[in-house]
Image (cartoon, rainbow, N blue to C red; front, side, top):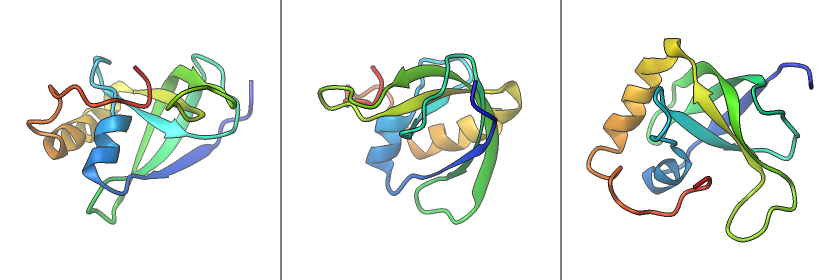
Length: 111
């Protein structure tokens, strides 16, 4: 596996956050665009900036989704991270930003 390193993701707006967020994971998760290959189960550290915020949230997670380079359709290369149990506050902040929108059938970067 590749050496652990921190990825950085700045989500520009709420519609992009809605497409990247993975609410079907019990602790929440997020899709991170990247060309770097990662393995399922690999631990990744992420510095996340949410829409309208300047604070960078530090979290860790495990790769549960991989869209490799060259993926077809609307998909972009990247990984889906399942947040660690310590990151419930990040999940809660995201779900507050997305209040009332999680039930909408918007296309996502994963499913």
